[in-house]
Image 1 (cartoon, rainbow, N blue to C red):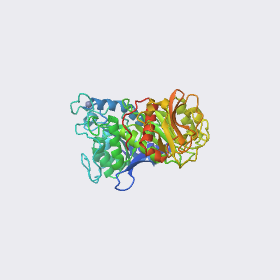
Image 2 (image 1 turned 90 degrees about the vertical axis):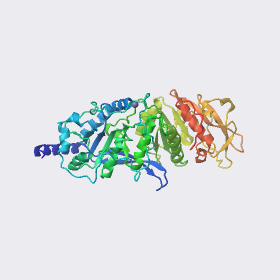
Image 3 (image 1 turned 180 degrees about the vertical axis):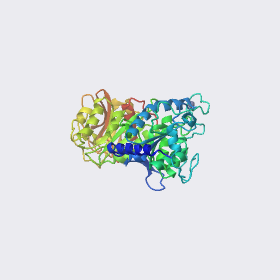
Image 4 (image 1 turned 60 degrees about the vertical axis):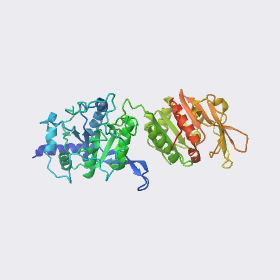
Length: 507
Ligand SMILES: [Zn+2]
């Protein structure tokens, strides 16, 4: 029996927590099939608000030691951030459940263990010690982990050296400890907890399979979300699909978002940018798509997803708005290595514009397309100051088309690598962009096909010492052309000072 005084104290604490903590605001991300059975998915992020008193965090297998040294090092690297998340969660009244499997002997006699064992027994609908891949509900895992997933050289010998949870994660008096799904279920039912945030390791194994983890809790009807930046995967990048370790984690996270539950980042609790492993050096690119004339929310988004995110495993954030006066999510620029603009005549509120200006003033690179020369009605000088352009309207040449070509004197510039020296026709009607700024270097020219006047259609510039690439092309038809996709990708790689890939853009 529970002590009634303790219970009423707990109730008082919960009441206090609810007084200062409003709902827990989350952005939940899923992969949603565009049409049933199509096999095509799109990323959908939805705001949600959870009652902290009906929410628990379950920490999966954040052991003191793993048989794989690489896995142990990554657990140690993310543990301090995870501990910050736990501190913030406790302040909001969220229950913390530590679940370091197979190490309960270490915690023998701890009140946090008894708290779980003493919860009134309620038989869950069905329980098993391990929930395997369930092909009735999910596709095969997107990575081959048949070798155990050690990414080290030489491979680590497998074993079970774990003895406790990693000490970096503090265990508070009000927390709970258990590695049994059925026992944790009792505690959740006793507390009326419906929502679970799962974090820890490893997405392709325990985070899905344990008796207290995603597959089981979803089947028991809990609302589950995975904290996708505080997790890891047992994946060896020498195995299928031969992507980087971190890309492997992204793929499993995508699998979970498709078939099991949404994900969120630690930002929801810490207010800080999401956690990122030191060794994860993939560029972070933020796309700003605010225009309704050129379908950049489709064309540029497909380019970002299929070429940069899928093929190269880059970390792409696509910010999109159909409204010229609002673009949420610009905080992502604080961590970005590159911003790609496809914007038209926006009047973003000062707080949003400030985030864009701060990015540019920090001397970070820019790629800008088409209407971005007139991106801001409340910052008209952006074109001249940042892009080095001088937009002054356009020719009305839908037919004939615009003929564009590489300037002979620009031959050899990395951005032009792989482009045909032959002129080609594009659907973007010609922009009037002369005269360019003093530092701008034109790379390609264009003219209306039956006229003689030429205008620069692609150039590079500098802003605060950072690389800037602009092209006035970007019509939806252009995105279907290998030459244009090549130019855009080259410009992005060049802006990041990366070697330009030899292969064509294929998607
Ligand atoms: Zn290893």
